[in-house]
Amino acid sequence: MVNTKVNLSGIVLDNPVIPASGTFGFGYEFAEIYDINCLGTFSFKGTTKDPRFGNPCPRIAECDSGMINAVGLQNPGVEKVIENELPKLKVCFNKPVMANVSGFSVEDYAYTVEKLDSQEQIGWFEVNVSCPNVHGGGMSFGTSPEAAAEVTAACRKVTKKPLYIKLSPNVTNIVDIAKACEAAGADGISMINTMLGMRIDLKTKKPVIANKMGGFSGPAIKPVALRMVYQVFEAVKVPIIGMGGIATAEDVIEMMLAGATAVQVGAANLVDPFACKNIIDNLPKVMEKYKIDDLSKIIGGAH
Amino acid sequence: MTQGLYEIISNEKLTETVYKMVVKGDTSAITASGQFVNIKLEGKFLRRPISICDFDENTITLIYKVVGVGTEQMSEMSCGKVLDILVGLGNGYSLNKCGDKPLLIGGGVGVPPLYNLCKKLINEGKKVTVVLGFNTKDEIFLESDFKALGAEVFVATADGSYGVKGFVTDAMKEIEYTYFFTCGPMPMFKAIEAVAVTSGQYSFEERMGCGFGACMGCSCKTKYGNKRICKDGPVLEREEIIW
Image (tube, rainbow over all chains, first blue to last red):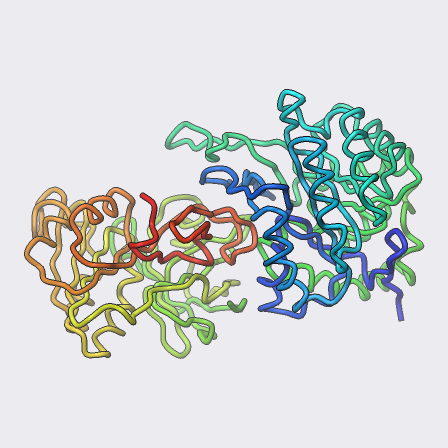
């Protein structure tokens, strides 16, 4: 009998598999097709202070081994999430859930985290610092160590729950940003968000996506994610949730060897709604194949 | 929605660019005409959403146009090949408000999902009129199939090479109807919206990520709030659409 349990900031997950924010809604779409309580947890749809429709369509472009999305954080806003979405989530999922939060100012982030903090089912916060900083001239909070630290510190003040900061890979040195978040009070690092990409339609000769650029995800980015998780693991003491192109049980093990305590699955959910369930079902036999009896013992094993 | 494996039992060319594929497998997840399936193709990351033309207990008929690398790959597939398909996606058409004389309006590759709808409406004893719009005579498909169901069929071609010269709206002028159902390109929708005299339902198309409501890749604004074309649509009621 292999052990797939991992401890994520004091909360034990049955397995390290976590559907990534924006690919799993608030869970209930997937609960229609399988019992989502098999998941370690899941990170719900990125929530902001105010409701957002997001970007115009087309928002999706296909790539070789991946896809680009420019959804633009469509969500009903934190009040409606609490009022309408979390009660529905509770019906289909009985484990602690990860609250993904975004914002356009430091105050936005703190406001949303504080509002959600009282929700019992929320086990962790995952704060996405990849959105543009409207006060900082549109640069993403996640592209500067100072801005990322400022968001971390502001959120730290309003919650005692484990606080993970989700980092953008579109930076010159992700290690410095991870260290800044750790120093500002983050309990962990979640990485990587999507990589900025583009497709151009040869018929129209214009970008496929209305927003022109979008976030590139899928198996194509896995080597970049592995490299960055590996680098950050060497530089911080807090746990890392690793993601980027994870689609199989083998990918989960590879990401954990790089340094991840838990692993998120994103784009794969959109292609195969059973992706996470299949990964979880396959994990024990893949562990046996590679002579792993306790998953938590392989974290950072490649170092 | 179900995910399953489906064997291709036929895949034939209907016109220069339009193909008809019949696959065999579980159809229990299909609950309404106008729903769609999402097909996994080798070497392609995202699935291909294709509307359901018709179905029975164990087959699904798909009529698709070759518009890119994915549909081109589909057109080259042989019988016996097995495909991974998500079935029973989208809301489909709702039949409960259509009165005695529903009008079905299809443009180009928007025609197929109206076929099963027509079959259902005729089975319910409705007097169904169908208007099909194509660019030219060589692009026409399904005309005789709708006639065989017992519908009165009018065809409009933009170049006048067959039927009424002009657009579906030119063919609609003399038709009396109690309700309409349509699927086709946006310019056709806008033309219909300008002349239609009853309530109706439009089936929309959008670039999709997942096809089952998870990614918010195909959202649109409606008078009743934001909707996902793949999950809350593809069929929207005339009254809720913001043009």
